[in-house]
Image 1 (spheres, helix red, strand yellow):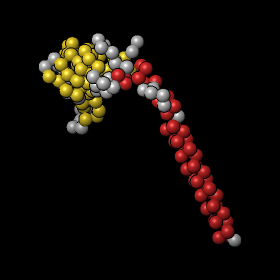
Image 2 (image 1 turned 180 degrees about the vertical axis):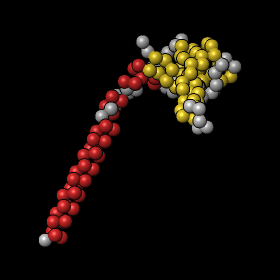
Image 3 (image 1 turned 120 degrees about the horizontal axis):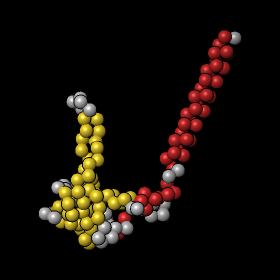
Image 4 (image 1 turned 30 degrees about the horizontal axis):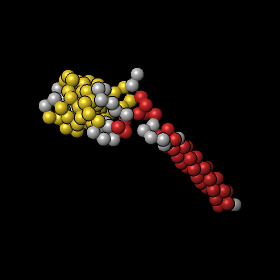
Length: 136
């Protein structure tokens, strides 16, 4: 009798765990797939408000960025240049990064879907800095 009661308790416990696991998997799947329709028709909502890329090369006051036609870049646009600077909180380990505005660039030529040529407007810029245009 005692064995049967323990078996029933175990079965109920497993059912609850299985149900909880299935529910968590379902909710996790919905969380992951819910934003996908927003990006299904081109660059998506994100690119309607923010254009972001990276400085790939610099030669004096000119360079190349990975922002192009696909990002709706336009000749003459001025983009802010952001550098991610490590931040420490008093200990020996870095606790993260802080974005710091280090200058501006202007798009002078759209090369193709992915790249544009730029000129430095101001700042001491480096390869791998982030270029960003926030649309108003």
